[in-house]
Image (cartoon, rainbow, N blue to C red; front, side):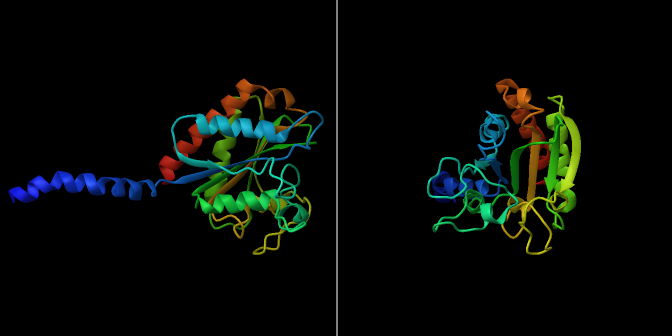
Length: 241
């Protein structure tokens, strides 16, 4: 017994890193996807504003196991800095042997095996200083995704003057031609369960590139929105996970 007692601290030191590694893998993974679009609005970069919000969220407490997927600036992809999340030619299409920026981002996201996936975009042409949450139609976790989206939308509204336009299904937008293989309905490529393996998936349209320009380009407001996102997400994760 005394010999075993002497060996116990040594064994703990040997196996402790392995134990920590195993436990760390159990933490819920969060993937953030900022818009990579730079062609939306005059003298306005949706990629820049959305990335600033997400960077602020990732920098905010609490620290989570989180990653960002972004194709901006890559020359080995097509539509790496433009394109629609609801158009086949900008998502699933192969051009000159290259996959799209959206396809790359989703492939990278899936490698992390996320528990939650949050995309942040800006709307355009709405003439509304507002925020919209979107979830995927017919999803297994549709009710939970609706709750998460609603909470994130409300959180951003709490630190801005954005109008809360609620949570909508991606099948209701009537945009372009990308359809979910399971339902046959129009959908957002990034939220499609056949593309994105995360069980919980939300897309936020934060503001309008004209009506909300002052807000979206204000560094302090970008930070406030990011912090609000992280705080509410952390609360939701604590309840859910």
